[in-house]
Image (cartoon, rainbow, N blue to C red):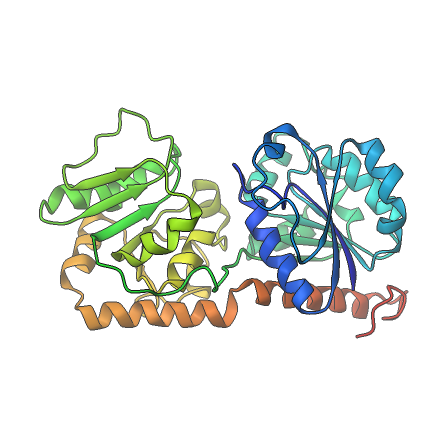
Length: 367
């Protein structure tokens, strides 16, 4: 397929999680012989932090305004087999309206922020998506699955809503021998809604076990946080050091944002990254967790500091290794960027098959 993606960013991972998602997806689409043109709005906060200015696996073009976009790329959007507009794209509603009027192929929206998007729609904040636009997209791709997909179709009128979850790059995240510096670690930026469960599940466990070794890595934690004496805080951990961080823990802690818990079926990329490293995960619970990992076999669920301490102190080394290895096997079988690329193509094929007014050749794609 010839694919055009209008996304928040692929050139800069500064302050956003979109770039790494797009990089993995686009790289694998290219590996599967699809051609991708990525269109990105040139904004100053990314211009100064472009860690991948020219990805080798796609054509990347920057545009300065909606007018510039239309003047230079109307033909490419019109002729593409699949056009994808991402969440948080500047002037996303206007961009989307232009795409659905211009594109002759499949028109899709890729929501990397689904719970946030739905909350914005509820309070009539139409920063990058308007309810009237959703039915005009042929395909709504969502980082969140489960009942949210029914909501998108039933309430908002999407003709076809499908999950396209986050993924992991197994060339960056894998087991490697490191000294076990910590018994339990957590990686995540501070947020008001995640701090109470972090205190309940991890920091209270640290306080109850002075002999344990704990670590929290992430920025923006206020000075008011009372770190236990046996808990190290790392204010900044660059992505290049994440693999070593996971491999230096006996267990890793997963804490989920409140809006993701409410929606359910919304795994975070940190979950897949830790699993790819073979580090056993102790997680909070959310609906749908057991559709990604088997509880007690591939992942451990904690509801209290007591639960956390039981896992840390009672699970033997061999069982700990087995839990991590089973989770790693699951991720490599279902949750890599290559899987997401294949899923995207399968959704396009499904859409064309279901479309009674078109055959498979109308979009220029042979299936």
